[in-house]
Image (cartoon, rainbow, N blue to C red; front, side, top):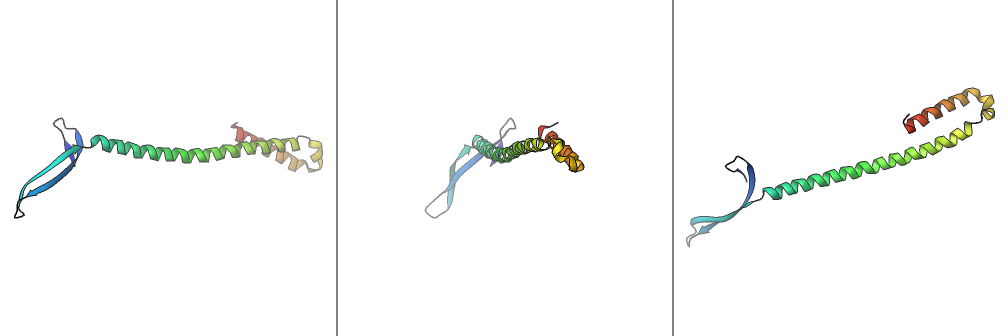
Length: 115
């Protein structure tokens, strides 16, 4: 149950109550306890948020790590391809494909290094 104190601040309480009966089964009065559970509810909400944030971070880190590994593999592949096309005399009969491959490698290198 949500209540407000004299200062206007909201707080939560849990009420445990029971009816006190006479021998005929009529209600004489109610007795019980009220506990302020505001702090416990805040702690529970914070715990849920922390768990959700932790799960999201784990999810993102897993995928980012995979992307970084893929990027490093691409860099190695580009390096080996650059070595393959670094001697143009091997490709002289295929001048156009050779130039296109060089341009693609430059573009790939720039996209994996950020510039």
